[in-house]
Length: 419
Ligand SMILES: *Cc1c(COP(=O)(O)O)cnc(C)c1O
Image (cartoon, rainbow, N blue to C red; front, side, top):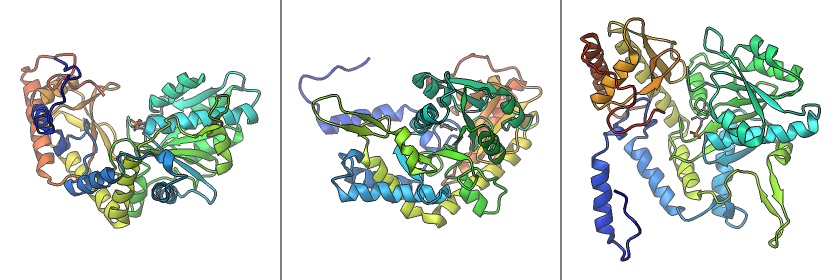
């Protein structure tokens, strides 16, 4: 039952008790669940983020022109993002509320750029791999563009030849992912960039997942293909701070190669009594507290801290890979490269395994093509949680083999919707 606004205010102690009580009926998601509720910062990461948030919880990033503190937070974050994405001198980074807004701004900027630079594209469209995030379509639908999705290749990366064949005179933008949320394999960005350059197209790289992990994995010696501004022809890169940078929810970034392109991102309006309104984000008022928390966390961790986080993610991946391979009937669809893996089976109904996991109190994310459990690797404070997960998975597989799981067809327990 939902409560309506009380006539008389409820004491804070009572409200706090109610919240704690409500929370206690949730599953223990903050211990890390590898797919739903990801990623999980350590208690220390969370504590300093929350403290910094509190110091600026009431402020908006819109105050930057008047408040030096907000200006500093914003410009330091922009510099950190640009350094990680190896952006050239003169690049422009905008902090956004999430990957959705970052991708929205990429599409909006490319569309307005194309109005000037590709006037022959009268019905502007985007060519994207089928693995690209749905936010590309969400943005396109809001902005009046079409998206042509092209099946990925057998290695789950963008099929560059097939994308080339899909380009028409209306195409204004190509999209690559670093990596896609689906399979975690970075698309061949240099090939996509060459294709974009040949056809005078905007290339957007959606690095919402990998933007803050790939650079660290590269430093640790992993083979990470170039996907950032070192690739000529990349116009824009989106990277979520609230994913692998472990910042509080509600912060991402969009970076343009050249600040001159901001003219296409910007919205300006003056036909109202207040004078000119200028904005280069979708949101107007934007929480400075989330940015302050990101500023503190990134500087607290530094390179050393993020390398440690990346090592943790690799360690988690290793434990999951060997654990899954030791469960008869299960296999891994794609060798995990970037914190994402899909567990499949030739013989078992993976949706029944997902149901059994959910019934055991370990709701998992379901993947459709092919049916799989989609797992996101995370740093952990205590590896026990990984062993617990794998034990439950072993048990769930056993139940499915024994025919003891009744398919629900929908997410069970905790009323978790499919993500
Ligand atoms: C998560 C994600 C998004 C959307 O980001 P939100 O922060 O949920 O708005 C976009 N692209 C990719 C590849 C993602 O993984």
